Every structure is written in C-alpha cells, then in structure tokens.
Image (cartoon, one colour):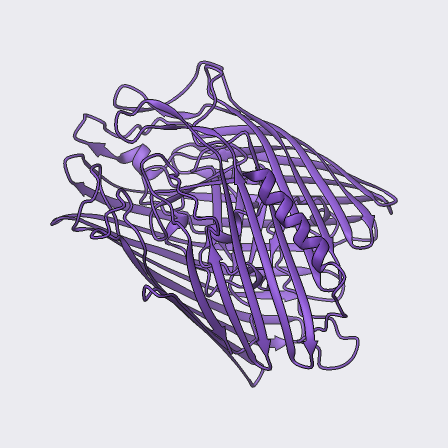
Length: 619
C-alpha cells in the first residue's frame, strides 16, 4: 500500500512540476520588500550561540497549506515526533519525542512553560489544543534543559501567538454539521498594536471505543487570544498576552460505548513584560507570567476535579561583546501549586506546591567565519530536589554548502506534585525524597544545500535517561540499578522550494529500549512522510493550490486495552488532500482527510477518524 501511495505522489509531482510562476509577497507594500517573518528570541541564547540551536519552524502559511485543525495535525510532519490519542479529536493525546516519555516534552507559549501541574506526571495533553489562534510553532528536538528548564529531556515545543496582522475570517464545515471557525483582527493606534483572535471547533464523528452510530463522542472548543504591544521607542516595547481556551469532550471509560462521560478542560494564560532590542544585537527581556488549569471530569455523576496554578518572573539579557564573543545571562523564578481529587473506583488526591529558582548563561565564540563554539549553562534550585545543573556544548563548522554540527547536552525532570505529595486508595503516599530524572544526549548533525532551492538535513542522536522515576510497590521511586533507558536514532529532512512548489520529505528511524532491552511501547522504529504543495496561477488575483500530506506510521508494540498483554500494532499509511481555489480576497477549500478510509486504532482499543470531507472559506 505504501509503495502505491508513493508512486501516486511521484506521478503527481512530475505532472505539475512545470506549471509555476513567480510567487508574490502579499505583505509587500513596495517592490523588493520581504514578507513578514516572525523572529522569537530563543531563551538563554546570544547572537553567536543561537546558531547552534537545532529547531524546526512551522509558519502560519504552512499551517494554512496543511489544512490543520489541531496541533497534532501539523506536528506529525516533524521528524522524531510520535503521537497516540485516545480516540478522535478532543480526546487525550500524548507525544513521544525521540523515544522519550510523554512527560519528557516541555510545552511553552511564547517561551514560557505551561505544562499542567495537576496531572499525575506533569505531561501536556495535546488533544485539547486547537490551532485556530496559533501563529507559529517552534520544535526543539533533543534535551533542551539548559535553554528552557526542566521536563525538556526529549525536547521542547514553543507556541507563538503574536504576529498575525492579516484581518481574516475562516469557516469550515461538513455534511455532519461539524465546523471550525476562526477570526483575526488587528488595530493600530498611538504606537499600540492590539490583535484579537477567536477560534471555535465542534466535531462529532465516531465513538472512542465503538463504531456504534448511537454513541458518537463529540468535542466543543472555544479559544480566545488577545495580544497587545505598546512601542515606547523604536527598540523597546511593552507587551501583554492573554490566552484562554475551553475544550469539552465526551469520552468512554474502561468499557466500550459508555454514555455520560464528559471532560471539561479549561486553561488560562497571561504574560506581561518589557522587551528591548537595539541595532547592536543587545537584547533585554523582563516578563511576568501566570497560567491556570481547571479540569473537571463527569463520569455518569461522579465528578473528578483537577486544578493548578503557575506564576513566575523571568529576566534575561544578551550582548554582543565584539565580532568574536557574545553572551547571555538570566534568571527565572516559578511557583507551582496543584490539587486534584479523583472520586471514582480508583480514588486519588493530592495538594501541594513547589517552587524553583533558575540561573542561566551562555557564551558564543565565533572562532572563524565558518567555525562557531557555544556553551550553555543552567542551574535549577528546586524546593525538594535542591540544586541541579545542566549544560550544552556545541560546535558548528561550515564548509562551502555543508553545515556540520556536533553537540553534547544534559536534561532534567523534577518530580511532580503528585509524585511528591499524592495519595490513593491503593496505599500510595507521596515520596518527598525523590530525586530528579536526568539524561545525557550526544548529537551529530549536518545540513547540506544541494542547490539554491534544495536542502537536506540529518541528525544522529544517542541518549540515555538515568534515575528514572517508576511506580514500584505502591510507591514512586527512583530506579537506582545503574541501568539506563536508552534511545538512539536518526532523523532526515529533505526540502525542495521552487517558486510555487514546496516538497518536504521527512523520516525518522528510532530504537527506544526498556531496561531489559525490549522495545518501549508506542515507539515505532520507522516513520516517514511527504508534504507536497503546488500553486498554479490562472490569472490576476486567481490561483489554484493543492497540498498532499502522506504519513507512514510504523509497526510498534502497545498494551492490549482488554487483557493488558503486549500486542504488535500494524503500520498505517494515511493521506490527506487539501484543494484551495482563490478568487480575489476569498479562499475556498476542500479538505479530504484519510483519503483511502483506513481503519486503525492508536493506541489499541481507541478508534481513529476515518475518511471525511470538509469545505471551507477564508475572507
């Protein structure tokens, strides 16, 4: 099946490869002006050290082309990311980055961590996040503790909300009354920029645990985002960001086709600060942040509640000392409080708080025009685990069209509030003597510019996690047997950028092992895919676009949802097709997801969406 799909894609590319014309920048106010590109300062970097940060950027343009509806739709095109979701959209979803655990990925908004402290293991639920108000996404694979802090053993994902100055309204629907809606409006006055976004999603397609048409599990999402900037001078601005969303999802419990199960997941985030960036590459940022989660689950009248609050203050600076050295310094204080009460047959509760004070720095050395050395340091002083330091050292060497990089980095995950203070009806009582999980990662990567419009990049990595926290004999404990969890693999990315054609081929090969040498669950050994976009002009203010997304998700092991044995899950080959026709200020869309109507579960026992059609318009 996969060979047939690849063949169809290849023929499509050949057929359309000759019809193109010069792409114009819609943002340009005058000839030669470049399109707007968002540049977000990476935490704990300076001019020369920032060159050694491995990252992928997904722009708003790419999100639109992919016809994406939620974060998972667009993140699955990044090498090294694997997802499982307990049913269709709106259900709980976990991300495994480079074979690490689902609680080893740090998630941020505008560079500020937002991982929910009311979860058992501090992981982020990607299933409740929708993409209507998101402007750009940055993915940082590999241990990123020295840049962003704890939880980033596998890597980090940064969601950028500001920077969208295009006023627009978008609406999608299908023949089942499912819809998605988004609107963006920006106003400028007296050195102020105010941007307001709203997004809404309603979907009801299938049951999580059954194909019974009488038990379709639906999701309703509402997202609001307000961004404000006040320019005090050309190089200094005061800013505020408010982001809030509510996702209400029906779900099933341990048995199939259950009714009366509903989750209400609310989240609020506020950021306020001052930024300064002058012509000499000097950068200063002070930011206050607050994030709140309020989750309620109704299981046929039994109510479970989960709450958490995070607030903090961060300051960082970066300076270019001369043409050889750059450096950065900063600090970050965060206070985390969490509480939950699970009142079902499995009863658990917790209430507690932790705080953390971090100091970080970096040094970039431009050894020569084609050689660069970077050092990143961070120390986290945690309320329960004390002082723990992380580092990254990276060397970059450019030889003509080849960009070569080698790095060594360490990671850190501190225990969660539940692991420290929680209780349950099985006799567990929090272990306040837990130590943090730690990791070491080595990377070798390169980027090769084959032609002006063809780039090929690859990263080889090997990492291990030690002191991992496990649930043993009704208690969370650090595993001190000196046997690490090991991950190693290689990621590939080939990008072809013609005038009106974009082709991206991505793949990853992974080995993620348990302590006994067996494969870890839900980590395929191989994934690959193709994202092909084509723009065909037909005349002034008229164009036709199509985008093909193909994703192969490899064979892997999982836990049987009924008898809890280990089972092998077959691979899947999913194709999405997006057609777009433009007339003046109107864009009309036809999206076909799961084109060949493949039936599959991921994880075992949880149905994923079959083929469906959506039509949409953007003005």
